[in-house]
Amino acid sequence: MLENHRSSGPEVGGELAALRDRAPNRSPAKLVPKSPEEPPKLAVVQCDGGRIRTRQPGQGPGVHAQAWREAKNACLVKMTHQTFESDPQPELPACFRDPAHVAELAERAVPEGLASPPPVASPTKEQQEDWRPKRLVRTCLSSLVASRVFGQQMHRESRRRRFPEASHRAFLGDGLPWNWSIWKKHFRKFVPILDFIHALSYLYRAALVCQHDLPAAWECYLRWAQTCWSGNVGEVLPELRQWLVHHDLDPDQTLEEKHPDKPVLDAHRYLTGNQARMHYGQYRRQGLPVTTALMESLVKQINQRVKGTEMFWNDPAGAEAILQIRAGTLCDDDRLAMYLAARPGCPFVRRSTSPAAA
View (tube, rainbow, N blue to C red):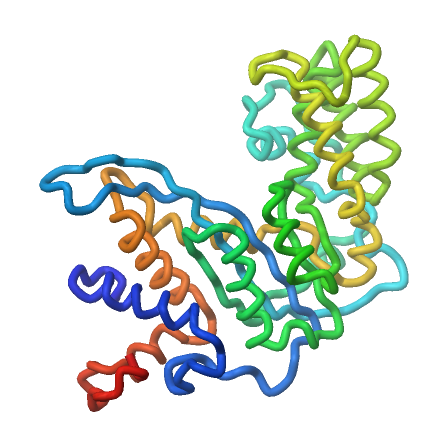
């Protein structure tokens, strides 16, 4: 695969970055994917941060000035769509009632001695699978640029794919402020949805602090998680606030990272700040996704190529180049293969002498 070719990779990645940043009307048609003939029924945009390790180039042998840089990632997905008169899955899914799985999501030690609640009779497994939107076509973006510039990249790609014309639109992210700055600037007509798994993680960590023993904490978590899954986060917030007040804590104060009560304060602040993006029952009736599972999967796929033991990329050109190639590889529209086939210098295409074609 070309992304493993040491001599061509940086050159191609740099070309892809330059092509990405051109105005659409200045991009050679043969080098970029065409817009679809019809807009999607359901257009979903998701974004999240990642990390890539860099080094300072031109410093001689060895790794100099190594650092972790934040990479911005996004996936734009055309999905299947259907709507429902009532919530197609009112009960909390079984995976979110599994103690071991929830502890892993919340990055806590796996609890011992807790049994998962018995499965609910309704909805059936088939119904649970049917309501979820399915991925049809995914395109990907990844870059080291600031969120303001990355939002422009996302906006250009969404317009090329006719996402603003979709009959149903959703924008999903976690609680990072830059996610919602991009939504506010470029995707205001998309339904904003907070990833449910991030909310769940905050609830579980808070429950472990609020209760004195593990069984009670688990029951507290289950109740809160079900309430939020139903879209009623407003019923959980007073409980968190009452606990904080009872322990002489101001919801607006700052606690040091290792303070034992910090998870409760963090959960209250996180849920309060994202309450308007947590109407999950309503989203499911509208046939919209409620987790960023597609985004989490994409980040892992990007990491498989750009992160590894003793793997560093020149800052910024080398890192930006590999991110462009990896993102192009993961797109469903064969854009990288199409670009390489039409790229000036391809052995099957006569090299153009026009600078505009480069």
